[in-house]
Length: 194
Image 1 (cartoon, rainbow, N blue to C red):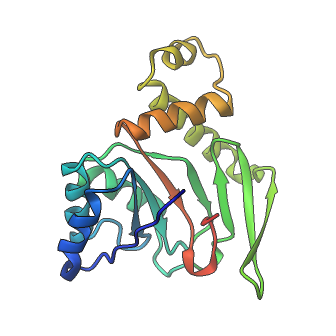
Image 2: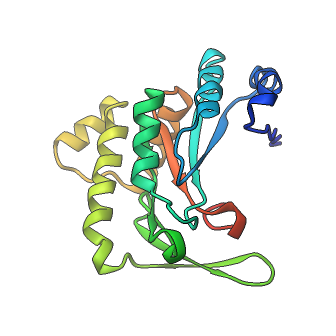
């Protein structure tokens, strides 16, 4: 059974957020792709740390004017003192936001809005984004390997980490609150939510 507790991010609801954190096994912290870490984000992040709640990050509103995944990602690292690791990177931004690249599966996921919600289609990574995706995947492997001796040995010996090893290592590091996986999308358009 999964129980989802949705708490508002507004400062007026700080007490409600604090109460809910006491019973959580994990939290998804949502950031605005244009604004990055905001003042209340810092408060919620510190509260989650106080109760040792593992966190994953979702950079939302990638279709918004001024959306900047890299800047939002950097603000999570710099302003929160977190240890974020990208698990997805966007394909485009603002009005050109088309989907994302899943760095674990190394697949591009394109979204097509329709009446009922959102259809998506997995494709190979476009040639113009292949180098960026490879660098991001390498960074993901390195960061996960730093949390597990067995994976570090494979990484040092230039042995590729398969998707299952990477997923298991990422999960263990997340639960131990050593890493915070970062996802992206647009919840309004149901992109990256599934």
